[in-house]
Length: 133
Image (cartoon, rainbow, N blue to C red):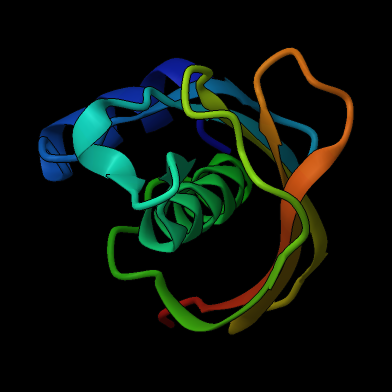
């Protein structure tokens, strides 16, 4: 298993371009936050879909690395996404992940995304990761 600090340091070193921060890791779960800037808004003043998808994907990755340790070549094999309501343009996006199954070669998890401080999710994702042997 890897700690929040270890996962966060790995993400920072390997993905310096990301605006997603790992807040919590453990117990087959993670919590991440994505700071939103004007460049990540689409017409209509809403957070773009790719930003939401990247946040969900990183939440899954962080939860899995917390469970199996730092295995860099663990990769996404599928990500199914449901956009549920318009995210707030002036709040961070919070991703809350729960791993549903961790096997030897595949892991499945779900992520609920929220505009920080608001109770209703803005999106929901289910993803599968391949774990290298």
